[in-house]
Length: 90
Image (cartoon, rainbow, N blue to C red; front, side):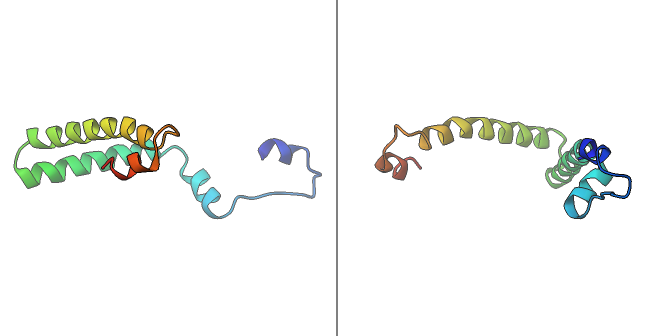
């Protein structure tokens, strides 16, 4: 959009609005917010279980569950499986 705006006549202008404006305004804070949210969840789990090791185990088990889920989803959505296979896959 910025490249196109350079070719506009001098009396034309543009501005960002809505969600795009908010996204441009916040910039690259997504990773920072995600890291803070993981830290917050870790601290809440540590307080809940009164252990520093238990939240680590929970994070690792969640990671393992997500990585094991991916091949299953690929199998269920593959065109070679029949609808009967999909119904009984759970």
